[in-house]
Image 1 (cartoon, rainbow, N blue to C red):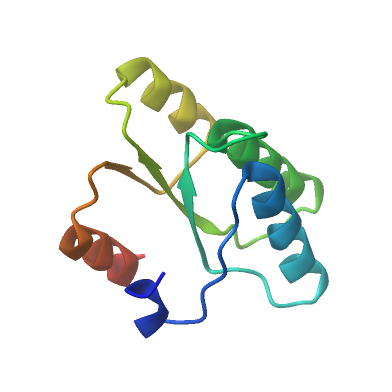
Image 2: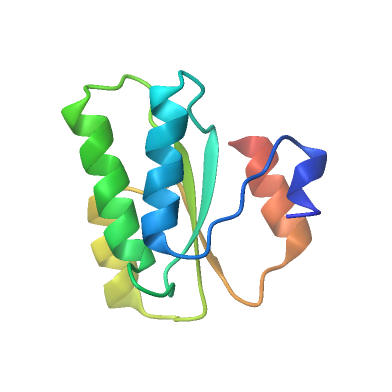
Length: 109
Protein backbone atom coordinates (compact mmCIF):
# COMPACT_ATOMS: atom_id res chain seq x y z
CA UNK A 1 0.00 0.00 0.00
CA UNK A 2 2.87 2.35 0.82
CA UNK A 3 4.46 1.71 -2.55
CA UNK A 4 1.27 2.22 -4.55
CA UNK A 5 0.14 5.28 -2.59
CA UNK A 6 2.85 7.25 -4.40
CA UNK A 7 0.68 6.87 -7.54
CA UNK A 8 -2.75 7.62 -6.08
CA UNK A 9 -5.14 7.12 -3.23
CA UNK A 10 -5.22 3.52 -1.98
CA UNK A 11 -7.77 1.60 0.04
CA UNK A 12 -7.12 -1.71 1.75
CA UNK A 13 -9.62 -4.54 2.13
CA UNK A 14 -9.19 -7.76 4.07
CA UNK A 15 -11.43 -10.12 2.12
CA UNK A 16 -13.42 -10.37 -1.11
CA UNK A 17 -16.65 -9.12 0.42
CA UNK A 18 -14.94 -5.93 1.59
CA UNK A 19 -13.41 -5.58 -1.87
CA UNK A 20 -16.76 -5.82 -3.64
CA UNK A 21 -18.37 -3.49 -1.07
CA UNK A 22 -15.62 -0.89 -1.60
CA UNK A 23 -15.98 -1.24 -5.37
CA UNK A 24 -19.76 -0.69 -5.14
CA UNK A 25 -19.42 2.25 -2.77
CA UNK A 26 -16.93 3.96 -5.07
CA UNK A 27 -19.23 3.38 -8.07
CA UNK A 28 -22.27 4.70 -6.22
CA UNK A 29 -20.35 7.80 -5.12
CA UNK A 30 -19.38 8.51 -8.73
CA UNK A 31 -15.67 7.95 -8.05
CA UNK A 32 -14.98 4.45 -9.36
CA UNK A 33 -11.64 2.81 -8.84
CA UNK A 34 -9.12 2.93 -11.67
CA UNK A 35 -7.30 -0.18 -10.45
CA UNK A 36 -7.85 -3.12 -8.12
CA UNK A 37 -4.99 -5.31 -6.98
CA UNK A 38 -6.81 -8.54 -6.16
CA UNK A 39 -5.33 -11.52 -4.33
CA UNK A 40 -6.87 -14.86 -5.26
CA UNK A 41 -6.50 -16.37 -1.79
CA UNK A 42 -8.56 -14.21 0.56
CA UNK A 43 -10.71 -15.29 3.48
CA UNK A 44 -14.52 -15.56 3.41
CA UNK A 45 -14.96 -14.64 -0.28
CA UNK A 46 -11.96 -15.44 -2.47
CA UNK A 47 -10.50 -13.36 -5.27
CA UNK A 48 -12.11 -15.43 -8.02
CA UNK A 49 -15.57 -14.78 -6.57
CA UNK A 50 -14.73 -11.10 -6.10
CA UNK A 51 -13.53 -10.83 -9.73
CA UNK A 52 -16.71 -12.55 -11.01
CA UNK A 53 -18.89 -10.28 -8.89
CA UNK A 54 -17.13 -7.08 -9.98
CA UNK A 55 -17.35 -8.03 -13.66
CA UNK A 56 -21.04 -8.94 -13.26
CA UNK A 57 -21.79 -5.59 -11.64
CA UNK A 58 -20.02 -3.81 -14.49
CA UNK A 59 -22.02 -5.83 -17.04
CA UNK A 60 -25.35 -5.34 -15.24
CA UNK A 61 -24.75 -1.58 -15.03
CA UNK A 62 -23.58 -1.51 -18.66
CA UNK A 63 -20.43 0.36 -17.68
CA UNK A 64 -18.34 1.47 -20.65
CA UNK A 65 -15.12 1.76 -18.63
CA UNK A 66 -14.19 -1.31 -16.60
CA UNK A 67 -11.85 -1.17 -13.64
CA UNK A 68 -8.36 -2.51 -14.35
CA UNK A 69 -7.71 -5.61 -12.24
CA UNK A 70 -4.32 -7.09 -11.44
CA UNK A 71 -4.56 -10.62 -10.05
CA UNK A 72 -1.92 -11.70 -7.55
CA UNK A 73 -1.42 -15.27 -6.43
CA UNK A 74 1.12 -17.69 -5.04
CA UNK A 75 -0.51 -20.44 -7.10
CA UNK A 76 1.29 -21.16 -10.36
CA UNK A 77 -1.75 -22.95 -11.74
CA UNK A 78 -2.43 -22.74 -15.49
CA UNK A 79 -6.02 -24.02 -15.04
CA UNK A 80 -6.75 -21.23 -12.57
CA UNK A 81 -5.31 -18.65 -14.94
CA UNK A 82 -7.40 -20.02 -17.83
CA UNK A 83 -10.56 -19.73 -15.73
CA UNK A 84 -9.65 -16.19 -14.70
CA UNK A 85 -9.01 -15.19 -18.32
CA UNK A 86 -12.63 -16.11 -19.08
CA UNK A 87 -13.83 -13.86 -16.25
CA UNK A 88 -11.59 -10.99 -17.28
CA UNK A 89 -8.52 -9.52 -15.63
CA UNK A 90 -5.87 -7.17 -16.99
CA UNK A 91 -2.65 -8.54 -15.52
CA UNK A 92 -1.55 -11.62 -13.56
CA UNK A 93 1.34 -11.54 -11.09
CA UNK A 94 2.85 -14.47 -9.26
CA UNK A 95 4.10 -14.05 -5.71
CA UNK A 96 6.53 -13.11 -4.42
CA UNK A 97 5.72 -9.81 -6.11
CA UNK A 98 8.49 -8.06 -7.97
CA UNK A 99 7.64 -4.48 -6.97
CA UNK A 100 9.38 -2.92 -9.98
CA UNK A 101 7.36 -5.16 -12.28
CA UNK A 102 4.18 -4.19 -10.42
CA UNK A 103 4.96 -0.49 -10.77
CA UNK A 104 5.66 -0.93 -14.50
CA UNK A 105 2.32 -2.71 -14.94
CA UNK A 106 0.47 0.01 -13.00
CA UNK A 107 2.07 2.71 -15.14
CA UNK A 108 1.14 0.84 -18.33
CA UNK A 109 -2.45 0.32 -17.26
